[in-house]
Image 1 (cartoon, rainbow, N blue to C red):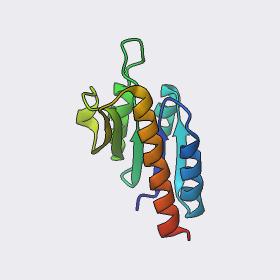
Image 2 (cartoon, rainbow, N blue to C red):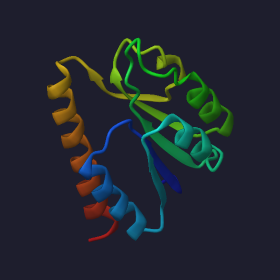
Image 3 (spheres, one colour):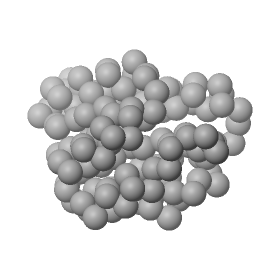
Length: 128
């Protein structure tokens, strides 16, 4: 029911574009950010009527995303965290989906299936 559904995923997935198209068809505001500076700028556009599906990549050499999560919390946006179940960002999450319990390739496949299913169910319920 959120008016804004944004994706903060640090890699490109075609299924997100398909989902965005379905969201757009019903008048939802949607965005897809891969870079932390873009996420920080986009977070300024969100409010309590927003959902952010976010999947941080957490390796020692990656950028710390604490600023992104703190900014999202201040806006009141609902945070759906995906990925590593031992994430350093778990305390910021309102909902955790697809906690990583498999190898990275298996997780990406599961995440793509999750997005495709969510998109198709949304399309079937709200568009068809």
